[in-house]
Amino acid sequence: DKTAIFFINHKDASMPAFSNYTYDELTVGQSQSLTRQVTEDDVKAFAMVTHDYNPAHLDAEYAADSAFKKIIVHGMWAAGLVSALLGTKFPGLGTIYLSQSLSFRRPVYVDDTLTATLTVKSKNDEKKWVTLTCEVTNQEGKAVVTGEAQVIPPTTKTSREVTALTDLTLTQTFSQ
Image (cartoon, rainbow, N blue to C red; front, side):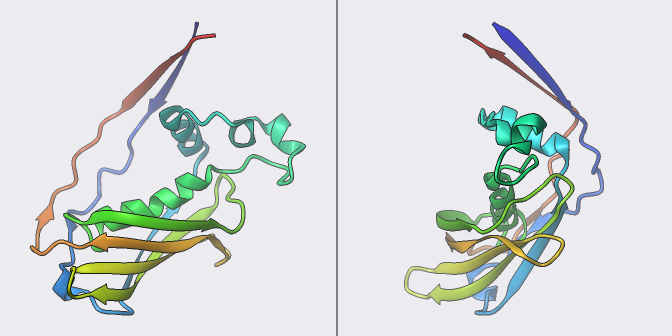
């Protein structure tokens, strides 16, 4: 057995309170964005949490011989920004995620700065569902992930303080 231990130090104690947009507050064309820089620690933590230890994401020697020539960030890490935006900002608290389509357009590298943008594409007044276009771009404005999400936005306006996170230790044991 092998044991891996990874320490995460949560540094952002200045996060604002979460709120939401209700179905009635959303309009076609309305959008919101979330920007985040990818760190090497993000990639390691994502690998540990998801058990995706593909060497393309973790092994520089292996990655040097790949099509991308260096380590690439997990595509689902970038797509996770869409989920974060849906659940925390737009529409926000109380949103029910129904479906998601994704296309991975280009690689993401450690230290890239990604911006996820959601835009209301359509509303279904009968079901109270919303379809949003999703785009994640890199610091050069190039799309790295695109797609659509279908959600049920909340019907009640609410806000809530962000749950304080402290340091986290991930421990995993691998059996051979």
